Image (cartoon, rainbow, N blue to C red; front, side, top):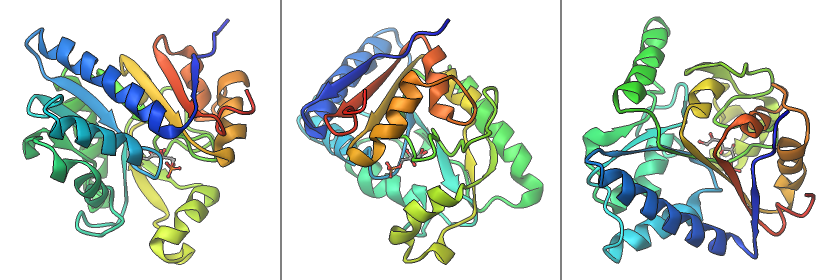
Length: 251
Ligand code: F6R
């Protein structure tokens, strides 16, 4: 039998992000006190924006340093160079890395321009780098309307690892406005697998707004199935959903 991960419903996303950011500072400090770097798994998309704004604020107030933090992003679009404005490399620089003291060598994001011949080795090296860093202490997640975490679309196996994935038509539709049209949205990405994500020691999934309420409810209370990769979080010992009132309204 599985127990659903706890869902914490906040009045709004600012309160959720303030709470989680303070918890993360506590975790980072306690890990660093043991003499090692803290390893964070990071997400992109609209959802983590207020959370990253909060981390930047804490950094400016002297409460959070990234000097001894190592990061691994969940995914990157295939075919986009790092300098493309919609690449997740650009996103992370713009929304977080350019505003904090993280050493460039500590940042890991899959390379969207890797050639087909080098792709398998690149994905294996990504997994190796996570392992060499000691595994992910804290993984931040959003959730797609297809129930994906990372870009693990329906049908992604529970034990999948970092690999090339095909984006679901719904995911591409959701990305179309920022790309200026559906035909501009990449068809494939590199994504950490469900297995990679589930090995993180602590997981926080964020979701805001009405549009996420149904899929959040399904992930938390529906069957554990590869049709909704976020449902695998029900089997994780330390995963928590941080929701605003709208995203939590179907629970
Ligand atoms: C992003 C990612 C995706 C997003 C999800 C939600 O790195 O892996 O799983 O978290 O598509 O996207 P938003 O936040 O834009 O609704």
